[in-house]
Image 1 (cartoon, rainbow, N blue to C red):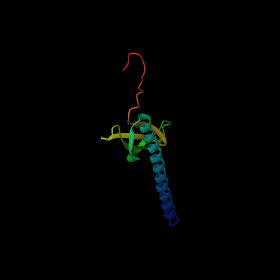
Image 2 (cartoon, rainbow, N blue to C red):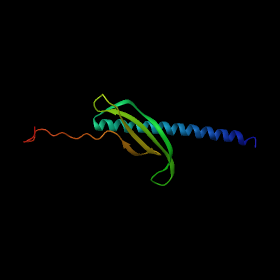
Image 3 (cartoon, helix red, strand yellow):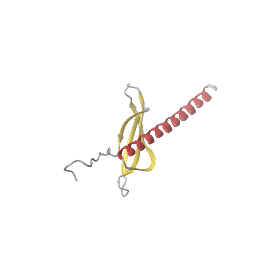
Length: 114
């Protein structure tokens, strides 16, 4: 019984460290997707970060129980206002990015257009 307590303490410590590392990796991945969404939309990504806002259990596409992590980021189109975007991950998979709408291509030079 005396040897069981240190083993349980070690397992709890390992679980906490693993969770911390997984949270950091998810934050880096969310940051990459937030940056990419802003670049593709041609908007300014504010604060250069994605902040964790929610963490809960969910099932991935294979039906296994994983953490679902939601991260918020902010962007601006004119520099005068702030808009909120969100990146959602289940496990290591990005399951949703809500943010700036994609850039609409502008066409110039066709007859009849000004």
